[in-house]
Image 1 (cartoon, rainbow, N blue to C red):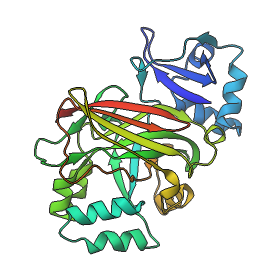
Image 2: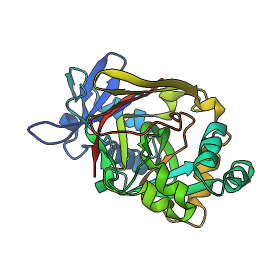
Image 3: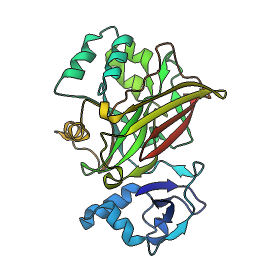
Image 4: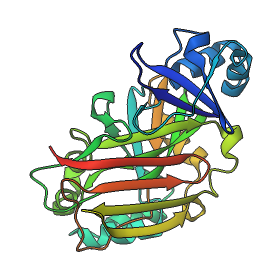
Amino acid sequence: MRYYRTASVEGPRLVARDGDRAYDLTAARPRVTGFDELAHVAHVASETVDDVARRLLDEADEINPPDEATVRVPLRADEVWAAGVTYEISEQAREAESGMPEMYLDVYEADRPEIFFKATPSRVVSPGDAVGIRADSEWDVPEPELGIVLHDGDIVGYTVGNDMSSRSIEGENPLYLPQAKIYARSCSLGPCVVTPEAVGDPHDLEMRMTISRDGEQLYEEGTSTSEMVRTCEELVSFLTRHNDIPETTVLLTGTSLVPAEGFTLEPGDDIHIDIDGIGRLSNTVTTV
């Protein structure tokens, strides 16, 4: 099933979508308003998230499927982390921007992946909201990525992520990576969380990104998560080694969709990221 968090006059609601039918799970359990809370209940009950949700469907109100205007970040992840250089084109792109290109090839071929902290909840924006580009950056790009949703270190779902990046700041010096990656509105997640049972093989999903400006499409490319040199399980293993992560954590898995070197985002641009089996994450762009 797919799980959405929507806004309403009564407050946030958790909506489960099973095929073409949608159900308000918060109507059945008022304290369950996000995927993280549902995952917690499933963990306590030693059941899957989908099993817990199915038990609630008879008590839940059937509603119209959620639309983009009402969808919010589907869960509260206390920490968002990200992996880099997991696709060959990403390694090549970061070599091109950097004055120390050999270090990215070393990471791409190494046993240990690159994993870095990405965002706190206050830095994550909802679908439909504006992601940020830094006012002190000259070269900014979105990075569409498959997001792994973790509960107590276990994979309980997948979502779509946008890892916004300043290529000019990181390219100036790799030690500036936190400034290139962590800032206001630097991340977006959504539109939903899909459980592993519904996703199937996370290493065989088609991913696409389009970028438009004033109605003109400037970029459109696609790829597959099968091109990722690391597995989801491997990345999670390195994230959780000697590292106490919060109960609910998201790990972004890297990108292979990189706009050409001359392209940079501008305020007002529209970004659409699609991952088959999960959905579309759309954001506009603003300067922060």
